[in-house]
Amino acid sequence: LHMAVEVNKQSLVSVILGAQWGDEGKGKIVDLLAPKVDIVARCQGGHNAGHTVAVDDKVYDFHIIPSGIVHPRCIALIGSGTVVHLPSFFNELEKNEITKLPDWSKRIVISDRAHLVFDMHQIADAMGEKKRANSKIGTTGKGIGPTYACKCWRNGIRLGDLVGNFNEFKSKFQQLVLFLKAQFPDLNVDVDEELKRYQNYAEKLKSLNLVHDTVFYMHKALTASPAKSVLVEGANGALLDIDFGTYPYVTSSNCSVGGALTGLGIPPWRVGMIIGVVKAYETRVGDGPFPTELNNASLSLLWKLYLLEIGDRLREIGHEYGVTTGRPRRCGWLDMVLLKYSIMINGFTHLAFTKLDVLDNFDTIKVAVEYKKNNVVVDVPPGK
Image 1: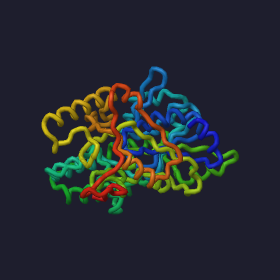
Image 2: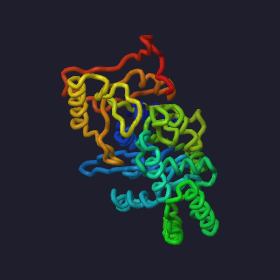
Image 3: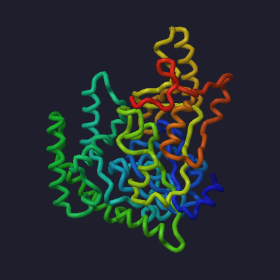
Image 4: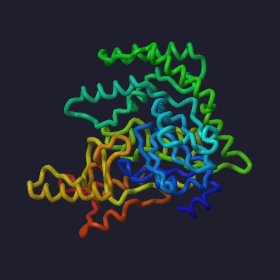
């Protein structure tokens, strides 16, 4: 991969994506390659993502800030396709002691087109999940889905609104509260208190000069002399993509390669290397299909207990607990059918396998190689 980044400098943009249901170890691969690039950029998702990076004896837990920020020469860019919860953003800065890093505020750039996640989005997320009763999605509860929904309704609020005319922001905020309360009548929002809090955030963002037009920023970086190199840090995974994932058990953004282009405003021909990060076995957080899960309820009790024991061993040896939620991950064997599907969509030029050493602890390793429906082999995973 190091050699590939050197060769890829003419193409300028390299993309790192999860090839499964997230939690593949993308942060570690980003951290491996970030010292060789000028900009590490997030293109989609929000603080529902979780990337853990260890530098010497310091461990960083990133959710919205690109993990390249720990490298002194690297710009961390949060693109227009992302959604940003400002309380979590500033908390992440403090928790990871980013404010102690050299020139940190000059190395974080946030798009003025990125949408804001408000606390009321998070409450609406939890209320929506509760309404689903027995058909829960298993969301992180971070308000990501409701925020993207507001974006599609065209009543979302962007960073540029916040740092612009505050009276206009106030009016949009009040309208958004009314819109969400119409859907969730039990939603309580202290509008005056929230406006006061966000006025403080606006002043803080402006004083730090963090919000910019990132489309123009990226264009200048890629056309400079010498041109800057970019590493796109994808969040979640291809099987959680809103269009190509196991719908409806998906996230609310495009976490396949197309999301890197639309989320940053860069042309396709700029992309040279597309790295798919693959865990040596499968894990999943939340509900949804999982063909190779080591917990098959249709089997006999004895077989089910045996599979559960293997799944539990994978979880404990691999430390399979969510960085964002702390929830235990569902575990199973590697699924080559789904991996081929992910490759089909993303056109990976490279694969980076992680956690191979976890499998050292098992005498027998299984891999799914094909699906059958009515005893007939199917070429791709079914759409539902």
